[in-house]
Image 1 (cartoon, rainbow, N blue to C red):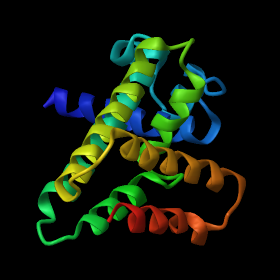
Image 2: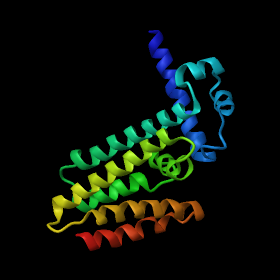
Image 3: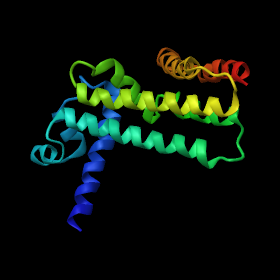
Image 4: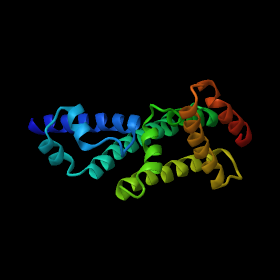
Length: 184
């Protein structure tokens, strides 16, 4: 029973830390701030995570695993969905400042040199999602290039950057609609 409480507290710390990293960035949120927000002792924090880098790595892994599961559900469980609907759902799952992808996106820009092990988690996810998009494109098109999957990811990244600079969410899907017309 003790492990259940321990894992709940560790997950609580991961969720709070992820939210703080999304809001303020990886370098502006320190261990003391996370400890204060989660109301755990410093000893407990270091017992669970050992270092800030390990915490960041675990936060990114949690986000990555969550996204991978959701993407798999969209691809595999929606048998009656069209190709365009699947791509749209994957796009909307990622192109959002509150999504799990946003933390992985931030990591690519913020932690490459400071936390290289955690950075690799974000890079592995990007590689995985590009491959999934490529496979999805191959199912519906005879002639497909890996560049089309990369363009799809760049559209998601561009949308996130656009959302950071404006609040106009209605423009979020205009580029996606154009892409879907071109690949169908």
